[in-house]
Length: 526
Image (cartoon, rainbow, N blue to C red; front, top):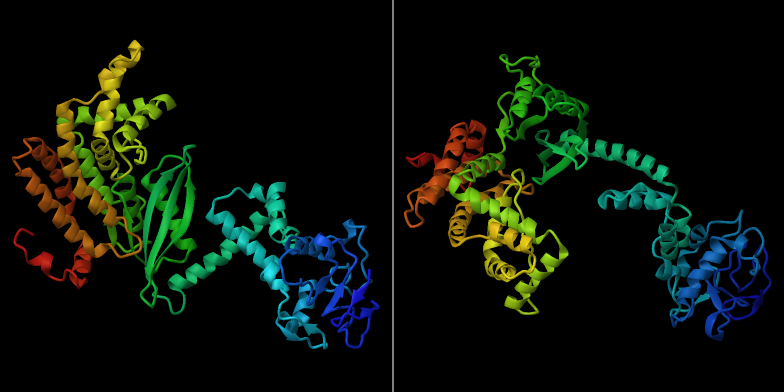
């Protein structure tokens, strides 16, 4: 293998300095080598601060292969001759990126510090390999990827993942480590992030007060977890939120167990003197848990001294609205239409044949370029899902009617009988039109109350006011018959139970909001 200097003169390889060639301490900035089987008959491969290529892009893929052979896996390529110790990439020699850092002047066009000429048309290392990949940078990126995409740790051990990483950056593939290393690194990073988060909440220069929201979630495997989320405003008035804990809880979800879990989270994070308020749903176990933590003297196991400020417990508005909706959906006049809608969604989704036939009916009406929608069912614990189900059925009324008309002549007797049993009658469709009008304000207010990127406390009183005004209007609306009156009456009974228990803190928040001020405290009906 013969080396040449920047002027094309042969250079004997070895330690020390070569005049004009720029060969210093075994490094060869500005030099070229031949003897490698370059594609298209080209026999030159320039090296400057590691590797560079002549303009043209024909050798880009080959450059990556040469980089891998020279700097990553030289011992597995017996066909290549490698110089002695001191050459970048050879065991015992310098890191090629350290070599590149030692000659920063060769990263741009001009004349290298060694006197070697650098052609402005030649492409440099960073154009092929980007920023230097360190182990720390790679592990941080891996943790972010696996956490953000919820990927299993075992993926990092898969040969295909390692091949993919090697294709992007060969040296990085050797730094991946195992899934066990990734798990350990993630735990370390989690603790470090926790400390940074805590300083952002209550550290020096922070606002110092935090509000909490909490709820219990059950996995498909029926494992229960208590989530605790913190919400706070920074000193530069930026609203922030962070999940503090996702704690598994075992046994019956009693108020005592919830109180113990919440207390542990608050004390572990050092927030005992920083919690401004806490919001939960209206379940009795949550109410008891907060009475325990606020030191209610009439509650067994109450903490003394209290863990939380007794005056700052807020009932979740969205949960109250859902309770009112569920009460209204129990009105006998809507029970049968709701039941049939759920059965229709299940009937059509039972097989791909039925689903495809229903999609064909939609395309027949809308044309081949039309948008196909699926029927959905509601879930009592998923807020707003009943409105979304009814709205979707009304939107797809025509395809539904066509689909069931076609089933009247189905060859299978059982299919014909099932279709006739679940089919919606005209009276049912009329009830659904009234129901969607009734449910819409609940859906809109729930969506607004669920916001996490903007404050919501100040809007609770106005939202109650708007909703109750609308329900009272529907209650007196005679154009829809008695159904609207029955629905509104059922929902108002639930809302009135909670509206008069609105805390003074929420009223103060409304009063201080420049959008509202005294508006909702001057009206006689309030």
